[in-house]
Length: 356
Ligand code: NAI
Ligand code: MG
Image 1 (tube, rainbow, N blue to C red):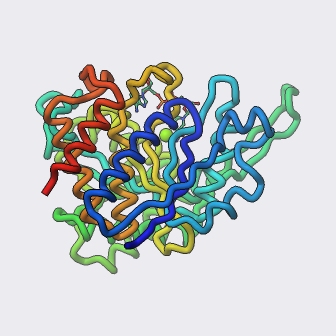
Image 2 (image 1 turned 90 degrees about the vertical axis):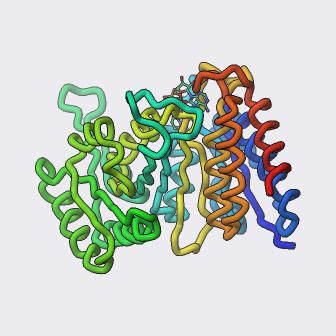
């Protein structure tokens, strides 16, 4: 029997609600399969921890996480703690500390879910966005001087390195190559940004030579929003910088029906450290504690985690169960249903138990 050590960090808001749902589904999968099990340790890090200890996680947080096979993360953010503290105090130190440089965000319209785009249904929108997750606009390089004075200056410097750009391009081309359409769109802004973005384009063209069977094109980020909305069928795999992909993937989630269904994997492709899997959404204060958080994004990211662990069959089984439950109309209010988080979770676990 294989045992996977999972570090669960539910953190804030609806994070604990959806992680609890995700762990129930993982348990059902392990029971159904019989060849693997999970050893889950839950960490109480997040905004409540911050209010007690003044830090979002202990100083040796990443050291504590290092021995795990994967990290299963909820969401951070509290109404009474500034967002830059919650984000830089927990999620980003893990992503950057473990050099999880590929942020992989699949999006498709699940059966039973209505896209806000007219005439667009399942099959018309099936994308994977690859977000550069270690540098670019979120590298944390910058500063502020002359605080509060009229001459105050704030800088936020984008850092693009040849190593960083080459490795994310290779990851994206490889992923595109593994999908049936073998189609990659490289998102850029090299008309206005003449240094980092021009280098980004040049490296994309260099890496493309290694993948002659992948068809690729280049798109300015502003025009990309239009293409996503008007020609979703023309896209498959997409690679973009940290900032651009952050924004585009929220748009992708909305076009696919709800932020509540969109998952993400923060992956260290070299497997030097554990990778981290989470729903894209935040802590959703407006629905916290109401029992109606959509658990689908968390199920989907659990499926990504299983795939990463080498349990592809279990990952596929989980997504089949989710699709079956969505198709049957068992959904939370954000996607037009009346079910609770636990109703959806029960239905998914039932579908897992009844699967072939
Ligand atoms: P949000 O994603 O928490 O919520 C946006 C809207 O989507 C809300 O109306 C919410 O109810 C809804 N929503 C989100 N997830 C849902 C789900 N699973 N089921 C049903 N409805 C769902 O984004 P918002 O409101 O901008 O941010 C709230 C807090 O979360 C902030 O502190 C922010 O910094 C943090 N945040 C954290 C993220 C993370 O941990 N990765 C990502 C985004 C925001
Ligand atoms: Mg975001």
